[in-house]
Length: 114
Image (tube, rainbow, N blue to C red):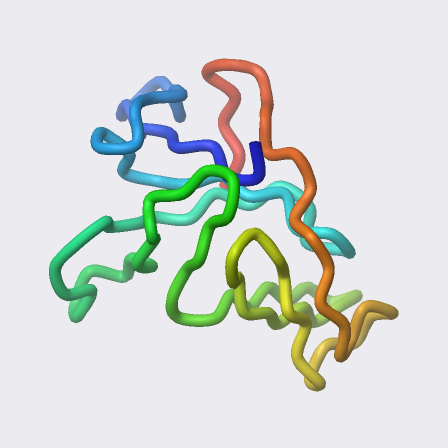
């Protein structure tokens, strides 16, 4: 599974759930980002929500807009299309300019990763 739908339960963390109940989506992006949980919506407009739109697929997820993660050690910027991470040219790591399949996103139930 390349995308794990999860529901945020306040005070407890994220819990795996059905696609239609997902408030967030966990991805395992190759390279320095690793496991990342993002707020998502399946339909409607994302304007003002801070969410990514998600196509609802756990095997071939597509998200909009792009995903940007940074730290003092790296910059990772990618499009998530059909289960792949397309790393953009502004990345600071070795996958810059490449398209690579997402890794398995399965994790322990109730784990809390932001």
